[in-house]
Amino acid sequence: MSKVLLKGMTWSHPRGYDPMVACSRVFNEQSGVEISWEKRSLQDFETLPVEELARLYDLIVIDHPHVGQITQEGCLLPLDVAGREDDRRALEAGSVGASYLSYHWQSRQWAFPIDAATQVQALRPDLLPQPVSSWREVIELARDGRVLLPLRPPHSLMTFYTLSANRGHACQTEGPGDLIDPTIGVETVEMMREIADLVDPQCFEMDPIAVLERMARPGSTVACAPLIYGYVNYAMPGFRERLIKFADIPAAGSLGPTGSALGGTGIAVSAFTRHAKEAIDFAYWVASAPVQRGIYAASGGQPGHAAAWEDDSVNAATSNFYRGTRATLEAAWVRPRHDGYMRFQQQASDRLNEGLRGRHAAAAIVADLNRLFADSF
Image 1 (spheres, rainbow, N blue to C red):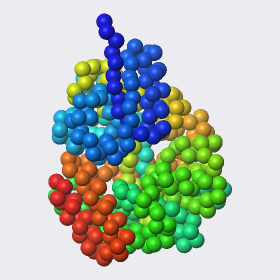
Image 2 (tube, rainbow, N blue to C red; image 1 turned 60 degrees about the horizontal axis):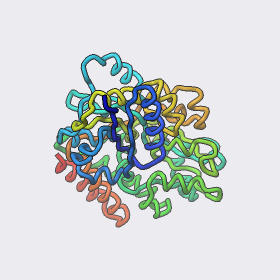
Image 3 (tube, rainbow, N blue to C red; image 1 turned 60 degrees about the vertical axis):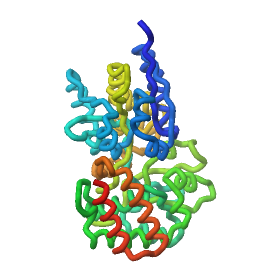
Image 4 (tube, one colour; image 1 turned 30 degrees about the vertical axis):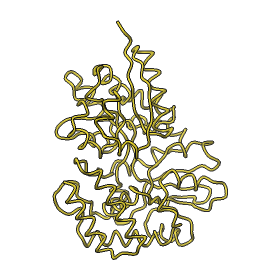
C-alpha cells in the first residue's frame, strides 16, 4: 500500500504555519499520513482563484467570510460526515464564541476552527498599568499621542463593524438592503474620523502586525491599540524586547465588550482531494481539545478550542492572553459570508479610508457603503 501524502495551504505567519507543521509531524507518527505545508499571504489567498487553490491542495486554512464563495464554487468537502456526530458535538461545545458556527453555512459544516481571534485591546503594561475600559479613555490617550489603530484595509472596515455593534447597532449580514442605518453609520464614521485625526497618519498603511511591532519597540511611547486582532506571540515573554498584553475591548456604549468583528481561521478539506478520509481525519484531529491545548498551543498557535483558552499552562505562557480577552471573543460578531462578500470587504474598506483621508462627508461615505453592500448580492 502506497504512503498517503497530503498538501496543505495556510497563511504566511508563524502563528499560521508553525503549529500546522508541528501538528502534522505528530499526526504522521500516529497515522502514517504525511502532510507538507505551504504558506501564502491572506491577500494572495483572496486574489487566487479558489478552484485553482483547491486543486493544488488537500487541506486549506480559510477564514469564515470566504465560506459562501468557496462553497458556491464547489471547492470544499463538507466535514459533517456520518458516524462522527459525537466528535462534532464536542468541537461545537468547545467553540470560543461563534467560531465553530461561523463555518456552518447552508446547513453544512465546511471547516473546523483551529485559530480563534477577534478585535481586542493591546497594551504595553510598562506604559499602561491597566487596560482602558471606555472609548472616552481611548480618545484621551490618543490626544496624548499614545494610541495606534490599524486602518489598512480591511482593518478600517473591521473597526467600523466593531464600533457599530459595540453600541448595539450591528451591521447587517444578509441582503439585499442597507449594511447599516444611515444615521448610525454616520455616527460611527465620525467616531472613526475623530480617532484617525489623532493617531499617526501612517496607521492607514498599518495592519495589526505593523502596529504591534511599533508598540513592542523599547523606545515606543505607544501604550494602547484599542481595536486590533490579537497575536498571542507578542504576549509571550522574549518574543520581542517589550511585552504586549491583550485585554477586552473598551466599551463605546453601555454593553461592555460586545460586537467585536470575529476573525480566526478554520481547517477545510478540498473537494478535489484523492484522500478525503485521511484529510478529514486530520481536520477532526487538529481541531480537537487535546491537540489544541497541547502541541498546537505549544508551537506558537492561537488555538480555537476553549480547552486551550481555559488551560492554566497555556495562559501562564502567554501573559493570560486567553483569559484576558475571552469575554470579547464570546460576544463577537460574525461577518457576512455570502458569495460576493469578499469583494465588498475590499471595496468598502477602500471607500472608508478614501473618505476619512479626504475628509468626505460622513453621509456620503455611508451611502456608498450601503450601495456597495446591496450590490454584493
